Image (cartoon, rainbow over all chains, first blue to last red; front, side, top):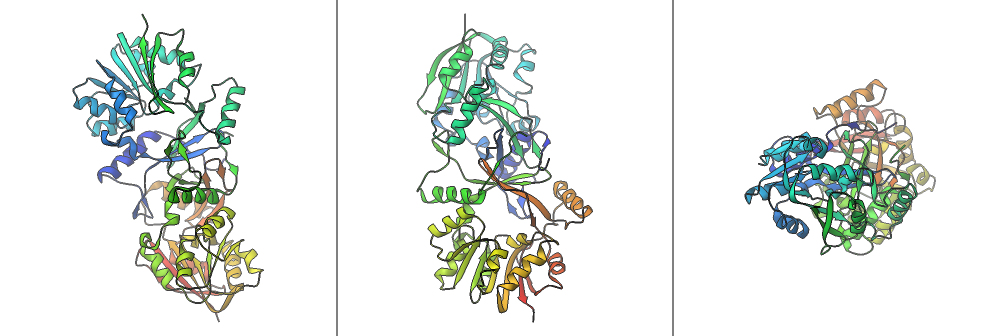
Length: 259
Length: 259
């Protein structure tokens, strides 16, 4: 098979290069060994759709953020677990404000970048692995569209249970999601339809990330409506208590620990 | 096989969207139906390397060009065939200066964009197909790294013969190339070595382009040194008479019709 990537830490390599470009420190990707090459994250979907997105936004300071990120940070209270901390843009602001925050990521390279940028408390683990460590939190952040990490109907219960296992009484989840259905593009509408025909949620994307010679394995990433989210969390340990639709189709979902 | 693209006019779709973004006219790619998505050309190499590059440069005006493009245009004389005209950035400047120029491309979508931007004489064909039309030129342009279109040892003789068949006495080729060997990156050096082991030129890249749901077939694209180029053209109808190395590793090669 031509052109198959080597499995590796795509996100870590991408962020390392993005940091080198942003700071001017360290080896940077060049075209022809001379002209700077912008760092582009490549996202493949299993139907053959491919998109490239400049990686610089992972390093954005608060002045460049979308408004929903600011509103999400405004909802934080107590000790925070920033899930999918990446290059640490959210964690850095919380730290500055004196909020105790732990950054969680499965990418060692991303954590190295977050550490270099000044994030102090970082853990390399999945939520399941981290739940076994016995630490407790008051707020779980799933920003940067990371509501997607709940994947779909199969994974959601165990993902939400892992967060509940780490939750103090009264804990909350603040999650950034996107309603995927406001499009007429047949590339997307037919993908949603095929998903449903196979018993999946319409926006249950099967993706892999690529950067230079590296790729991830294929993984599920959920883009769902607030209604679909409500369906996924019912019968579980969390209650969907608020949906902020100010920046639709993007939204912030707030969930509270039941009981 | 997950994630395989549909074969289509990648370059044309890419340029159409890049034009829509640049002009604000026509449907543009959006993230979540709201935020503008930059148009990124994705280039896969058969060893799994992948790169994304913003497409906006295909529409660059002369003030944004690299210096070698200006020097290439300064070498033009007589009637010009701009091979791989793309969105027409070079052809447009020549037209403005009153130089008779024909834009050649195999992408119908690229030609539609070039036409919309004002290029008047456009042909959708390969050089071989166009050579059968009986038109004659004094200058053949292979800019935007399009020396790569000679592909390698197998294709070069017929490609150069097609240009010779369209050449008036005293005709010239102005080609932009890049020396690929000024790198220590093992991703590239091992690719070059494997190529040579298989009897190919070191920088004979096997590529495909992708944009959204579309991909091209895999094709060869040659990145070679001036010395390798000299080897490819000897015994053929063209003489390599000048190599402008001012912007090394990029160079401009000038070839004259022999005899």
